[in-house]
Length: 231
Ligand code: GLN
Image 1: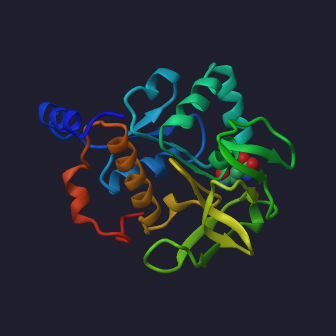
Image 2: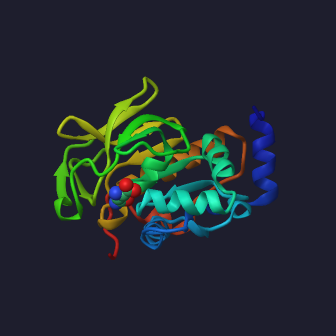
């Protein structure tokens, strides 16, 4: 671990730089995630190739269709690099992204990156027509959270290192495992930025712990937790 003194020197020499969040942009609703993180004060970058992971402070695996994402990852020789990257760097995985990140995928069984110690069942609440918007309790400060479920997966098992931050019918919908945050719903589709703020806080802490220089963009300071943003 870098000594505190080195970190200070590094910060002085480089000056502050905004947190940079990459969004995997192979398929799915990556644009909405990029917008949500830009609104929350981060610099955002769309990631389509392994080399574009370089220099990112955190990565979003968006919702969409996990089978399609998987095909693209395998075709582009991106699968292993992505797994290694998110085993060390903060990652926010939603829906299809959560399926990709999980250790075990069922219904049907599917290859995954295996970083999140959880079992995830695909399309567990039925078809597109069974999608739902629910306001449910959460451990995040600020009270219940609006959750948009679209052909959502269900987390049916979590390992001992996984903290459950929200549930639907007794099954986790928002979980954290160290530097990983995963949701079975779509926080990028609501005006509430608390989940993005939590992830940015995780990224900041991770950067600090790994001795890198950091600061969020100046405008982040003007937006409180739970602040509204344009849809
Ligand atoms: N049903 C999709 C899958 O299995 C996930 C849906 C979503 O990301 N909203 O990959």
